[in-house]
Amino acid sequence: MTEYKRNNNPIDKSFLTGAIIGAAAGVVATLFLSPESGEKNRKTLKKNMKKLGDNLDKLQKMMAEEGMDIQEEIKQTASKVAQNIEDEAKKNINSAAKQVAEKSQEVVDATEESAGTQAKASDSAKDTRRTRSSRKPKFFKGV
Image (cartoon, rainbow, N blue to C red):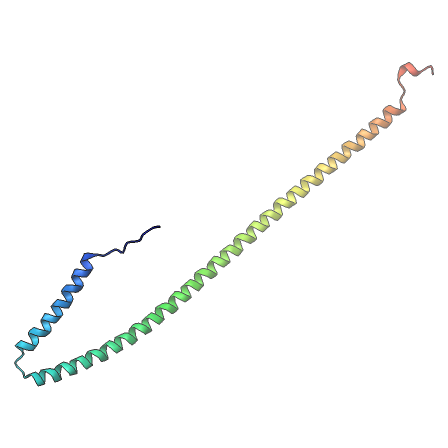
């Protein structure tokens, strides 16, 4: 049985780890080095977190709308491409059918010509046989 291995990229993990550690260090440094009291820092932090949450909600809504717009564009483009393919296929099928009809007519015409030539040859062969059958060979003259 084939065993699939997940590609664990160490660069992605180290970047994410560094970003988390850096954010935590920034929060701790800000709290310790702030000239204001802890209560005022908490209020400010709470207010900023609420603003951040509101901004994230707005961003999420914008992304959802953009995603819907992009999805609609993709649907329209796919529909146009499918219609173009269908039109091209119909055109090719009609062209092929026309060519088949033309070739079929050529075959029918050639067959009719051949049949006509064979009929003429058959008629002339019958005429030749009648002529020969009415003539008797010379050695039967006396009979």
